[in-house]
Length: 85
Image (cartoon, rainbow, N blue to C red):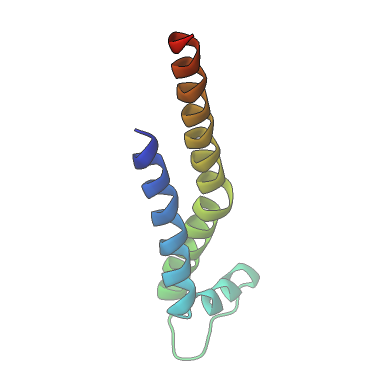
């Protein structure tokens, strides 16, 4: 389970980096009701939603998953030491 949390955290960061590498962050101009040149408002809106969700996942959810995994790992080590004593 701990490894799954770390994989999920890494996946969230990878998704955010891919979205950024694709250049979709330029579509965030939709928030000020302007669109990038050569894009329709609907496509830019969809891209901006994907960018916002991916960065929210990377910045807010991924650290929580990582800290949870670390906490569970530490707890398992403590319990292992208590049972060996």
